[in-house]
Amino acid sequence: MRMFDLIEKKKNGKELTETEIKEMIHLYVDGEIPDYQMAAWLMAVYFKGMSDQELGNMTLAMAHSGDRIDLSHINGIKVDKHSTGGVGDKTTLAIGPIVAACGEKVAKMSGRGLGHTGGTIDKLESIQGFQTEIPKERFFQIVNDIGLSVVGQSANLAPADKKLYALRDVTDTVDSIPLIAASVMSKKLAAGSDKILLDVTCGSGAFMKRKEDALTLAKKMVAIGEHAKKTTVALITNMDMPLGENIGNSLEVMEVIELLQGKRKGELLEICIALAANMLYLAKIEKDKNITIEACEKMARDAVENGSALKKLSAMVKAQQGDVSLIEHPENFPKAAYYYDIVAQHSGYVFHMDAQQFGIASMILGAGRETKESNIDFAAGIALKKKTGDNVQVGDVLARVYTEKYDTVKEAEEIIRNAYCIKKEKPKPEKLIIAKVTKDEVIWY
Ligand code: URA
Image 1 (cartoon, rainbow, N blue to C red):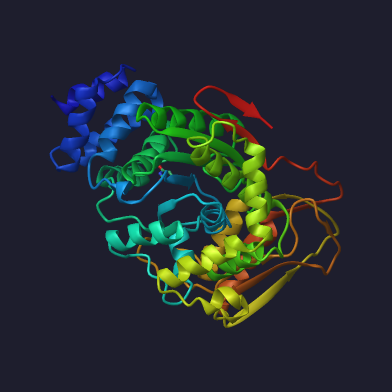
Image 2 (cartoon, rainbow, N blue to C red):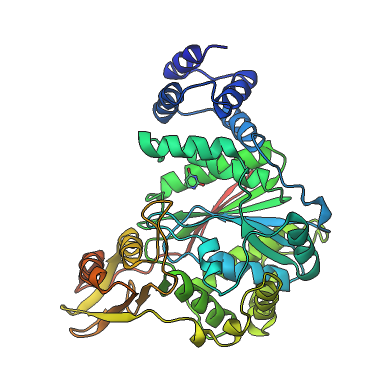
């Protein structure tokens, strides 16, 4: 096999065979295909796309390029969930405990944040003492005991993806739908769960800004999951404004605790209930053919209302050596040295929010990483006081920013002001759950 021939094939829009794909990924990981040739092939994919067969083969080859987690030591069906990312996206922290409280198993590997998107592992590490790197056996034991554990991805999980992603990042081929689908699904398949629920975010804070693209990505990822013989379902959810009210690591954990205490209603709760219900359905349908999504939704709501989901969060924090008193008293999370209120200069309605800009402002305040090596400030971030659809009067607080570095406030303020679009007219409310994609159908809500 010559890489030159594979580049030419893809450049002419032809399909690579399974053998060619496997060999290409294998040789690339081993360093026998140079970056410049792989970059040329990725750019050809960017313009010519990939067939479902080709994409399925490439994803499996990437998933098999390193460690594969064998979750058979954990009893029962294991359901995984993955979000394609957003701003203020703390759903894993709420959904894991809800699903565990309803009797199903969540053995989850999560990532860290980079750029404008946050990562679940950073959020969990804002709980003092919380261990995200624990031995595999302990991870299995915690899930067997309490139904839930969230850990960092093992260093050798899908190394082909790590290498390809770094190359895509510097060759402007990140935003290729088949390449995103292969990247996400290679990690999900290597992580070993039986069922996969995908949260494909759509809007100004997401990779996919347009519904058509979110649908294409969702369909491709579902097809890859099914190609690998794992039931895979995707929900397309609204990320046209930051999710919930807080952006930043401990701020988001505090918001989740309040949500599980039943103190927060609204869009974050509704998205968490919808995602949790779909995870529960994927697990429970194997044992009870008559289960309905409505029944799963009720179970998820009950788990929040009766406090059992909050107890699961505490149990996981305790098992992973975090300071469990913070779950009982979230007001004791360390505070940022400074806060500053951004007040409205015009009256009207918040007509639109550029969610990505809020993510960037939060990163500048210290909550995110500009590069992989940056340190993060767990207490930094933004608490939104006004969101899309809210009425605003001159002098109202739009958002409160928190930071250790006061010199970042002016820049963050300017970004946040520009990210709020305030108009005289009230915007039409948008759907939170846009569509559900299964191997058989697309349901629009
Ligand atoms: N998230 C991933 O894991 N990979 C991508 O390519 C994009 C988002």
